[in-house]
Amino acid sequence: MKSYTKHIAVFGSARSGTSWLAEIIARQHRYRLLFEPEHPINTKKGKLISDVYLTKNQNDKQIDAYLKQVFANRVDNDWIAQLSNRKYKRHLWPYIPKKYVIKFVRCNLMAAYISEQFQMPLIHIVRNPYDVISSQQRVKFPWLYDMSSFTNQPQLLDLIWDKYGMSLDDIKKMNDVETLAFRWCLENEVPLQTQAPYAFKHKVVRHETLRGNLQEFLSLCDFFDLEPLENIHDEYTRPSSKTHPKSAIRSNKEAKQKLESADIKKINTILDIFESQQYPRE
Image 1 (cartoon, rainbow, N blue to C red):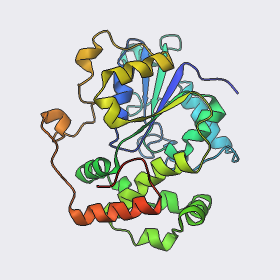
Image 2 (cartoon, one colour):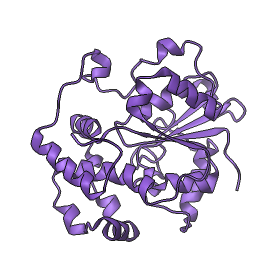
Image 3 (cartoon, rainbow, N blue to C red):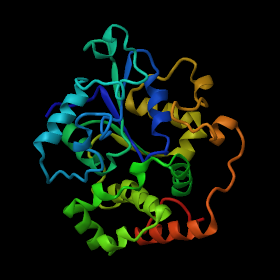
Image 4 (cartoon, rainbow, N blue to C red):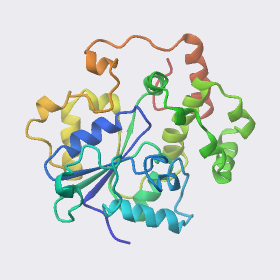
């Protein structure tokens, strides 16, 4: 299998800082950002990999073929190529990019597979579930609340039942906040708890640590052989293109409590089921 060392994949839940991190890396000259090739509507074959649980013991030729096309910069549309230099289709010229940055928000459950199968460096960015869920409730993307992509995978359902004692009936009864907490756990606890550590070069980073410390980002650049922007000190606090207009990042105001105490209790119940230890309970 070809080694994709000119590539770096950024994984994380929606509203966890994936856009900010991928963009701050990819704004470097001759770095090419491939934006969410797993989007099931905005990409023709994105549904093949969206919310899919895939392990090294499985083999799906369609998925592998699509991922190879993506990583070879052969999948192009307005969604994937957003924020790219598309004049004269320069973003597709094979010898222009020095690095490819692939940004995912619905592929955490196959991050380990991509790491091992494609020997690709990756960053898994994790943000605390309370802020993630609060932000997701604000944007209310319909797909966030749709669990059918997960519940249609028998192997994943078996894993959830065997390890956490949750059944399909439990999932169907969840309200919106519980559903988002469940999604957060699937995307951040399941990959890090139930699978072996990522096989190839990788870092698991916290959004809170990275966002507040430029040196952490520069250390990432050293580790992954990435070239930071010359004016990185000025650019580092710049919001991503996907930051919500009312976000505290844009307003520079301290974020206020956005979740009701009853919602926090529901979130904590789900976190307890998944035995989450990544963040202290609120």
